[in-house]
Amino acid sequence: MSNITLEKIKNAPKQYNLYPSDKNHKQVRIEQKDCIQFLKDLDSSTVDLIVTDPAYSGMNEKLKLGRGRIVGDYGKKDNAKWFEEFKDDPENFKIFLMECKRVLKDGGHIFIMFDNYSLLTLGHLMREFFDVKNIIVWDKVNLGMGHYFRRRHEMIVFATNGFRKLNNRRTPDVWRFKRIHKSGYPTQKPVELFEAMINGSATENFLVVDPFIGSGSSAIAAIKKGCRYIGNDISKDAVEISRNRAEHFIETGLDILQPESAALAADIENKFW
Image (cartoon, rainbow, N blue to C red; front, side, top):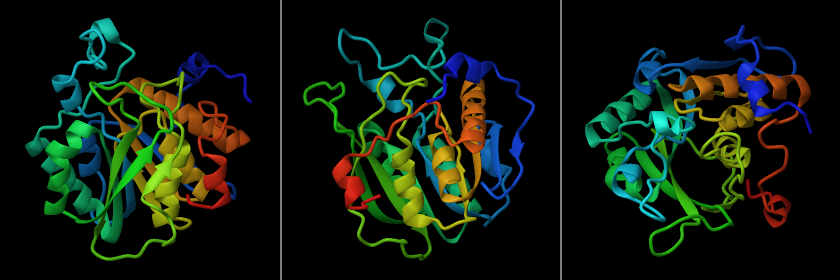
């Protein structure tokens, strides 16, 4: 395991934005923009796969947990560690989905993660733009917070822009990956979660895009698959962390933020992801 700390990751020189292709990996680019502008700057019908976990605002506006505290006052001065949210009202979400559809190739796939609140308020809108095929449940194995029943899962909506089969028809619609404890970035997702998406829908040299890169887990998954990758986030910290995490992984094969697998042994043995 590398002895590079999160602070070193954030403070490393930012002289790069584009990693050149070589025998070990394909082209990787990580940008800092508003998610809508990021998508608008991509050419139409050029993306093979979108995998993303938006920073939804709805749950934090509606739900309070524990002793009346919000899950995260994102972007506020008194809670600076949290990231800025994506204002997820229906009209804004429709613009986001419209741009996703524009950049996806015919037959392209899209995976969008949802929390409990956003799935009910926004998930149905995906049918206006894509052919929705599945709702996948991410079983986090360990219990989280909750109002009445404690949450142990999140949902992923899988849809297509036209028709293209999955690479593997044996994969179940419940994925068991342990959630990341004591993560270096808020709401850091396991790399294996994005690997399951990418392995199901991409082949080597496919272009994978993530408009909400966060800690860069999707970038690591894409690099491991040998895909081209473009990631984006509005947060400067997220971009810095993701760039350095990807650079270190390309150079050493070590993942600074997730040194151990989040997959359960039985699922690895059955090759479910």
